[in-house]
Length: 400
Length: 199
Figure 1 (cartoon, rainbow over the protein chains, first blue to last red):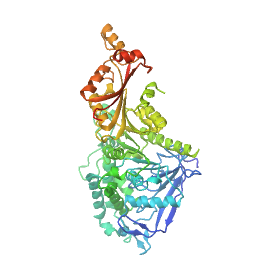
Figure 2: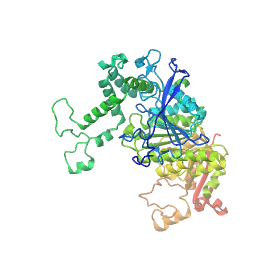
Figure 3: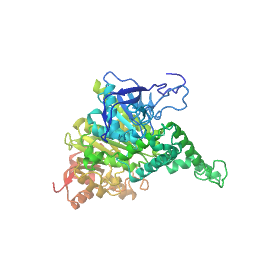
Figure 4: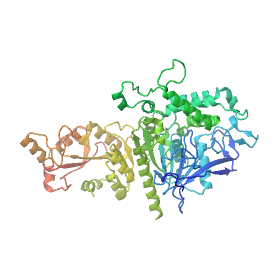
């Protein structure tokens, strides 16, 4: 590892592309004849192959969960706060596998890939994939890399939903399911926000019915709007206040403090331009995102969220869905998360209890809203660490 | 082993399902998992205790047991435990009902306020007892619903709860013939094994 990276970083990492020739039948009935999955791994697989952890990413995540691709990278992978030597998902103890899901836009086969049948970008013709399809493709990856059983499958938000699907569909292929800030299915409000995001994209004149890459353009404005509305749902009111305003301490000494409504240029413009810091921030986030993310992938990911409901095969009874699961479950939620609030995790916990499963659940006090699952919140990270250390002890005692 | 665990574990069926309300650091469940192969779930609100449970491999759910337990199914556990927590609940009678709804039987332990030391303290000094046993002052105590062995017996009678076993011990959890003879006067900790009268 290079000296230029922090000592608790996995350092320089190199993704690896796995090609699969075996057709994958999707939930929709459509078939992907062949596909690629882009994968990163961190930490050594032990001789018994019993210390592997699968990381499932959320809406805009990818395989690059930890470390750096180049010494010039400004930022590490998206979950570097939790993955690394000595971190909660300790790469000294575990072999961590992280992939870009099907339909993604970071190297795995998705709408921006070339369709071998047509020689053109898949674009809108890429089939709609569901959480179940992702997990099925993750099983293929698991077989490819020679792992029979995950010590744990771990994910937050949409990643946490994949964790639940693993426990339901492949009960013998994981020992522990760690689902963070997830929900048993989306609420009408969640779907409503997703639909606003989708409409922003599809109504952009540069969307070209999804064939924008063929037209050598992309729906920048639409993606920006989609990300802006999404971003609002990731943050809590209090997180926005503290991010875009003087702290309460300042308020005690300064009557002009304005609870999160800091002006960008110190004065009102009396026009329709950006006046407040929060506006400027959302513009920045939206713009940055629109340059790096494929619009069709965004549509697919939000649909996968909307469609997620593992209880559908069990007449709406999630506890029945969990009946055959035999892993240990560990769930966490965050107090100010209004996208997937604690009550949603509690619903899952209740159904797990109903099904008589081993479950632990923590509700973490955190100001940061849904975003909290990506942040180094001490109680959250410590609990994850303690749980996984216990998992490692169990692996070690099984081996001896 | 904590001596109260020694007593409680005699009443636990091997391989049974246990719900521990206010499970603390999980040591009781951990012990029962090892010695009786039970499947256990604990409810707890203290963060440090929850951490300990996780480190010990004890299933723990962060929840205040003063809040609704309605999501637990009827008879979904064999035994529901309530160790040294009864006196700190806002509605102890409601929780006892819930225990016996969720579990086929329940085990309750509580400090016996009817013990001669409390009686003596109150009558001699005219003030709420403060001791090693009950270290809090009246204004900052978490123990808001102290009761005596006789009080608990009366509650069980009112609710048609059958007392399968009852034992009282001292702070070192030692029992004796004289505590058996005068439980409410001499027992410091009461341990009850209860069930619904209709089964």
